[in-house]
Length: 316
Image 1: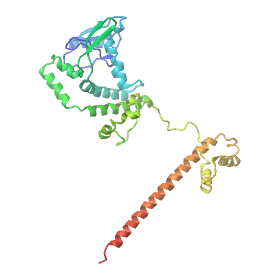
Image 2: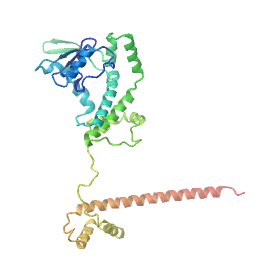
Image 3: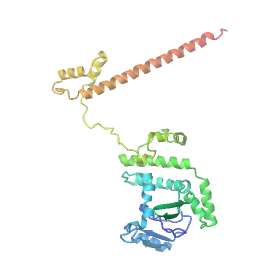
Image 4: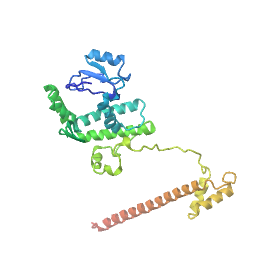
């Protein structure tokens, strides 16, 4: 699309916005690539109705949109990642991410702009203008009227970059769960998504690796069993043996089961599974024992403190 200075920009894969009222400047032209997503009756009719000049890139000249296509990597992929998204819920989450990212990038992300480039032999000297945000660059060009300038300045005063960044990370977690499992994982309240916890973690978030959830390696955890439990019916017997003989080994228990049910446990193929079950059982029993002792010690301490308080009170 052509802005106030006639510079061409392309909406990319997002398509043409149904209304140009969100832009602070009038749209003069729309230039799309040769894909049928842009060259169709709907887009052409919209441009004619809005008085927007419609042009297209040259055929077999893929670099005509090079300045715009590079944003697919530096903006879109950095925000969304490379996971597959499908469905209406994922579409709404993606639209929410773009709405917040638009404010964060345009108002709080300064960038360099090439000012001049000279060549001296094999040496190329590039000079850049001072870094500015897109909003600052738009206000500095002097092409906006007073109402649009005041509206942008007022909108800037109402925005908080930390809140916007927190919102971006929250939506990215939703998109990451969509890419991993196909559905958004329910988040329990108070699990670190409040703004205070997010601000405190900004100084150390780099220690945990990639900060963007859409770029972390997503692993879908299986909550279901992939095969039948070989000890579903005999585990009460094994648990009774463990209660009566705490020091018995898992291999000895396996031999007892083979002697008791030779048709089911004729081999020791389930020995490793039994070892894991016994280890988990002993860990749980140890935790219960330690917690019970600690709770009893706390109760004894509370009772002794209450008794001292009663004895220290003077009798009337």
